[in-house]
Length: 128
Image (spheres, one colour):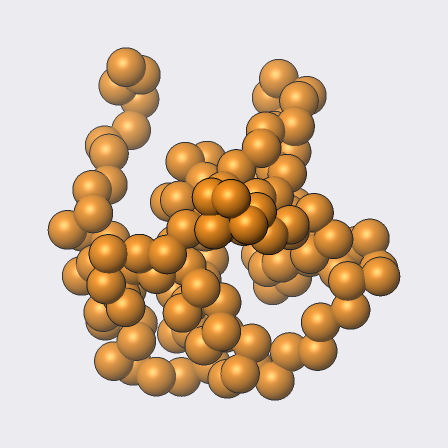
């Protein structure tokens, strides 16, 4: 296992998500979805920023959402899935719903560049 970063486990994610949910602001729900998306996708935040809404697809067999997440370093696309959590603090569906409602987000799946996390996508990038 790559030891370049300290892993974040379910208990820590639950504490972070609980704090965001208790804050209850649109920004808190946006951060909640961003952190949970990155954690469930087991990727970098910069990769999660480029998940498009048009790539989200419900799988009736596994009862989860599959999506495609670009990986800039190997220049490949990784298929990921978002699942229901063990509780309301770790549930991706709850986080997505809270984000859509509190941010009054209009979703247009016909636009290829309608990002799942537009605020992450528009954030300034660190210099190389």
